[in-house]
Length: 159
Image (cartoon, rainbow, N blue to C red; front, side, top):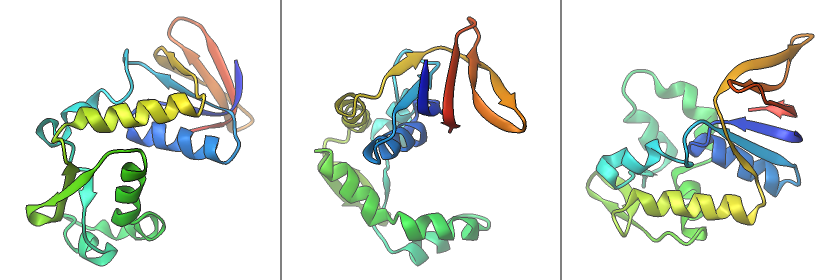
């Protein structure tokens, strides 16, 4: 199967990358080794999913242990408020608690996972289950992946 973008991993980063590419008119596919997307996301924040902190970029950076300056560029392009608006746009009401921590009103990480799964379905992004075993490299470029069971998936971009 060939696609424009192949996202290896169906966690929050892989799903968001696929959704962003699809929103920009690209054909995407997600390769996930678990039976369902967002498996680890379901247990974050003790099952409640602490999405972000409701503060400005500089406050967030100041509270990152060690040196969080490498995040400056990313947080300038996608602020905590952008993250909150994104999930509220997917239909997940949010609340801010002590320490400016943001959770779903339901206190269920599962609601975040379900919202992402529905967005993937609406975008028509296929999710293929399998273990990425080998990258397909040609002339220094990653052109796809071969799974443990021998299937090959090629893409213009592998994320």
